[in-house]
Length: 165
Length: 83
Ligand code: SF4
Ligand code: SF4
Image (cartoon, rainbow over all chains, first blue to last red; front, side, top):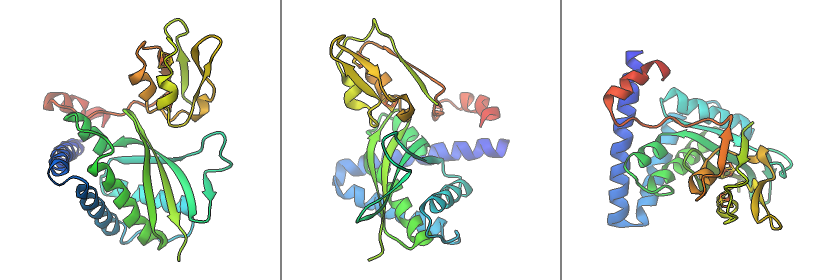
């Protein structure tokens, strides 16, 4: 248990440090901070999922992403969510497959709150990058993760996995 | 499933909860000028309605409260057994 406590302390310290840096960068360079965080997240996603299994099934791919996060001690817990008027968890369009995701425990949100930084900023964009990198490895496809709502106790996002062109 | 109650007497009909809810859980009862819960099953437990409501009219049950990052190392060590 002391090891777990130490991990948690390290995670808190790293994330609050990142939160402060991201907030500072946003003020200094504005919009470009989003691209920097996206690219950092994408690199991390690709790196962490390097040995993850491959699949074409989006739900299976999401469970692999969850496992990759867990194995790398990332506190980013998410689950697919279906509201009553959607026919299924996955909806198909011309663009590709769409899934709504709910993020509950999130080390980014928790570190942002600690110092009163805004949500939906560049650090939140890191998650978009992470998914993009991990799904590229796992499914071989491009994807986007749009924040529809950033709440105090949970966030709601739209994941689109694009068809291969 | 999350259970939501709106305290009928507390609601002042401002509709802030309808505006903020990402999954459209609420409808507005125009006759009574009050918010009502229409699709409880769609609640993701973000608690934004609860934070925003000027009347503190909400009560959520069966939802998961996200564990905060602790500011005090003493509290963090006390949390050890729950991590
Ligand atoms: S935010 Fe509160 S007071 Fe306003 S309509 Fe909703 S329940 Fe009523
Ligand atoms: S907790 Fe969030 S999802 Fe649930 S009713 Fe309130 S605003 Fe809507």
